[in-house]
Image 1 (cartoon, rainbow, N blue to C red):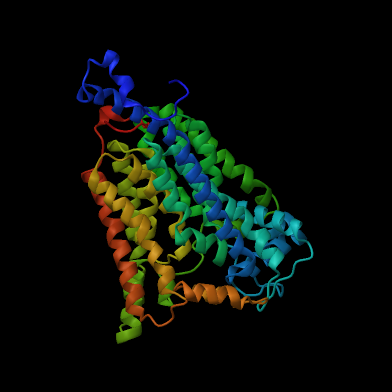
Image 2 (image 1 turned 90 degrees about the vertical axis):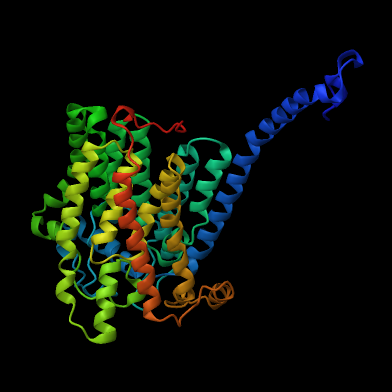
Length: 473
């Protein structure tokens, strides 16, 4: 009988004196044991299949497509290779080498260093305003895609509970059109900041606060607006860690910032570095074209100007004081209420997107993994619903936009790949501006509602401030 792989119900009837009805509990136990053994390996296997499919879709598109930033990043890498630590003196993109004049490098230096390594891998590559080598496309996008895929792995590891739940939320990221578009097609590097921020949140919730804020420092040195969620993470952790440990963690974060910044400041480029890293890349202005505007307030004010001729540009200046006020209020509330690190970080970035006057599509990449993790962790059904909605809603945009355009925008063009995009509906060009404005307003409304409800309805009692990743009771 030990060699029989099938479940024999008779074996639960000792001496034939028990009925089949009496044997059913034992049979169900055996079935449950077999299913548990089956699920032990089947969910990880399915995850690996999804991970492989996601990697294939990304690496397939990477050398065939390029957004306007891809050749510009090549030029930044070339200027850094030529001028070294004096780079920020030329970061305003005024040199002849830049495909787009005036489109400056307005980021901290971590992505610059990664771009330089990509250039070292393709030293003979070339990019202009009409072409970009396929080798540079792939080399530049590869670290972004790796970060993108790593987010899926982190979610599978960190999501609490059953393996099907891990598979669900990790899979939602790996098949997310927003992640695929920004990392593999358009070629923006927000996934690197996203994976670092997500790793910092997970480390903090695992109890390793020092590693968390070291990683958070690297995230801030990738995209400076990540500082908002990091600050709220820190405020939400004060009651659990105590002021002494928080100050040490602040010192670690500041140390990381100093390590990255000091070499560039040592050349005397204080104003240039500060202008690029601290000041906004552009002054408040109308957000055109509206298909790229994802702040609801700015999109609506721009629409009023374009459609009805209203002079609304002055109202765009309101966004900055609103952003500052909302952030300061959230900082106090995160300290006074018991939020998880995931909730605090998510709120921090949602505040930035809801009130910053210029929000591009790639910015959404950073909060989506946090929303998925929050949805997996929460015990509140409404919070789970909100988090899933704000995570999934940006996926609608690629079907409202001509994604195929980036497959032939720069030479070498790939029209067969563009035709594939057209067949799956990713070549839409006729949506009126009100469609894009409606999406931006809907997102902004959900962001603000999520922020308010988190503080009012979804906070935890102060006695339960241990930020653990176990399934809530």
